[in-house]
Amino acid sequence: MVHFPQLISLTLVWEFRESQAHFIIPETFGHHLGFQYLTYFNLQGLLQWAELLPFLQRCPRLAFIRIIWPHDGDMSQLLGICRRLQYLWFDNRHQQVPSAIPITDAITVPHPANANHWSHLRQIVAYHPTPAVYRGIIATFQDYQHVYLNTIRIRISHRLTARDIQALDLHALALLPLLSEFVFDIHPRCGIVQPLLHNHVLPLLQAAPRIERCCIRIMHRDDEQTGIFIDRNIPVAIMARIMHHMPSLRHLCLHAHHPVTDAVYLLRQLQHHQVRLQSFDWLGHRIGSVDLFAELARMPGLEWVALGTKDKTVIDSSDFTIFLDHLAASQTITWLVFTNVSCFRDTHVFQHIPASVTQLNLYDCAGTDFAGWLTWAFGHPERKVFQDNDWTSHTQPVHKFPPPRSFFISHEQRYGS
Image 1 (tube, rainbow, N blue to C red):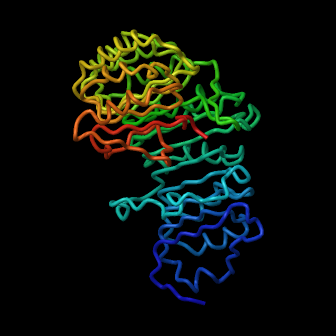
Image 2: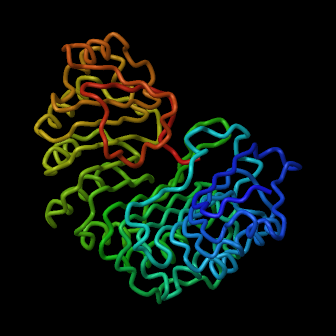
Image 3: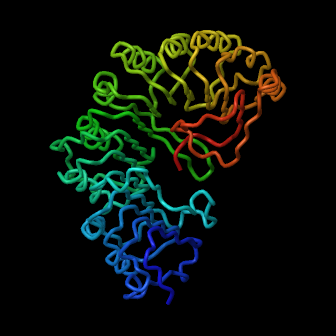
């Protein structure tokens, strides 16, 4: 067997549907490959827990893991074995995961520049955790040893029930002083949306005084790739926490059933507390309001704005141009995103896009006038068209912006999967 005494990073990839093609790891596999030095492990394929466990036990320095979670995996056991674990990413979907692995997923897990100076669990990303795994996650948050967490991203499926979270209480949660990124998505068919928000999300936010990026979404795509919303709002207590107790907030994403007046009030409160948002992503019941666009223009330093509705909203194009004219008062907004807005069927609407905008993304905006966007995109020599069919992340603004005057149009939606 080949010997890699200094192996630090390992990526294994195969199609998820090849259930009989499991990569069986012999009991002495770790010793032969020198896995005592392995730090980064990315597994894009399914292993049974009995196959994965012996491997993990032979990786004493393992710090970064990205895996498809086994059906019978044990969260507490993994954390007990991987004592140096700093980054944990996993997905519990098996049959639902596409057989073709996107090339962007067939990469090693992140290698932070300061990783060698880290200790304790720092980042946890969990997609569609089973009830047992979710209980393990909650237990992890309650463990005083995990006060170093700086990133939490969780996506809840519709399979989680009230019985699954019975007696799971986070109200005695210890302070999470380093938590800066919090993302919590809930499938609309999940029958325990409000208990999750009240009993888990709120305590986590209350324990984290330094959150910079906050995202709460109550919607997903269904099998027909259409957006599903739940007709409930984010609890008042959570909204109050965001408005009054997050001075470090820079990126905010809220997807629920709120009326546009809630967005206006939220922005005014953030201004009052001098919160300098850099990005604002709001998807709610309606967005047709002069006040909304005016308040966005008043936010100092705001660069990225995403607005959308739960329905195929019809806004009169003349009204929409007025909204855009109010937004033009901002000199900092460079990126606009709209979802389910039909106003772009009229060419003249593009003429009212603020001059500072360098990228326009439209999702499910029926009847968009291509002549209008071509005129907007190519109106000056420096303007360029930007198209990316692999665009998948629309809730988190990227740090490096595309070329000037770029435009991206797609029917891909900004919902979780």
